[in-house]
Length: 119
Image (tube, rainbow, N blue to C red; front, side):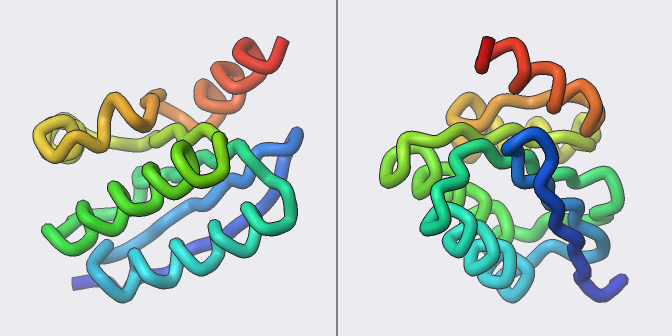
């Protein structure tokens, strides 16, 4: 499996995290810490991209659920997932992550969706 890496940037008040590799418990914990730091600094819009993630294992799915609930329930923010193939989308729907998190095909579409909801 490819090792997990991620990049993070802020664009139009949206925290964009692009994940790559194998998304498992360590990846989930790493992304959670990054998101919590942004939440504490007042950010409320998060876009997580999974286009370069080959596999999300069960603990990874649990981490995404935890992240989604933390953003929505604890900080009244919004989360959007992009780059999901059919299988990943199905698994996240079955786990209940979707509809807590919205979905878009690409990062650009996700940014556009956030822009519409902010207007």
